[in-house]
Length: 286
Image (cartoon, rainbow, N blue to C red):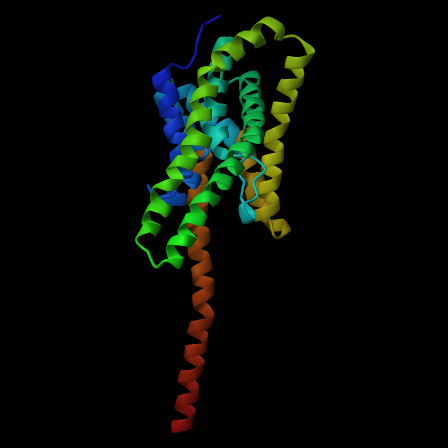
């Protein structure tokens, strides 16, 4: 089996990406949490850092399905996308290569999903740790407001939070990814591929995407006819062999058509009302 791991430079780059995934500034939440921090995007970034873009994208896409409907209402999280993306994906890549699995196979993707989910759950500790340290900076900010030193708020908002992310994102990411290859060696020595533990891991990993899709459907389906779009995509992927990129392009075409149809429906009542007013004016003139 191939011996793989993460070197120090790669670990540092992964740690920086984990910081940028949620730190204020640098594009803010839109660039960070909802773009760079998402497994689909992070798969490409991690693939570039680790020198295997194909495997990174495949693993990122597989993990994204589980967390496709992940939101953080009121700051409450069930999983941390920073940990999923920049700890889970690198560890999954190391594990899949170390165990000699094909990343595109069901076993490889199940392994990636299971590892990503475990890391994401543990990553909530990092998320709340960051929020707790940020309370210190918030206290400093209130003191500055009370003293009328409003310029200090720039430091509180743009500089001090980096300390929180260095402590709770950068350092844990660097340490865990560097130790990842050792964990793979332990798995190879004590958890054989045909053992109950690995079979359980693959089974759980294969079921998790269904949970992610179900959560997404619960959010976007408001009436039974909305399911038609989902079933159409399922037919494209499962029965006609269309890959995810092709299905996304076709979905984009339908989205544009539905948008134009909806706009026409909204404009039609306004046009009818305008015609009715014009006829009323004519009758009054007569």
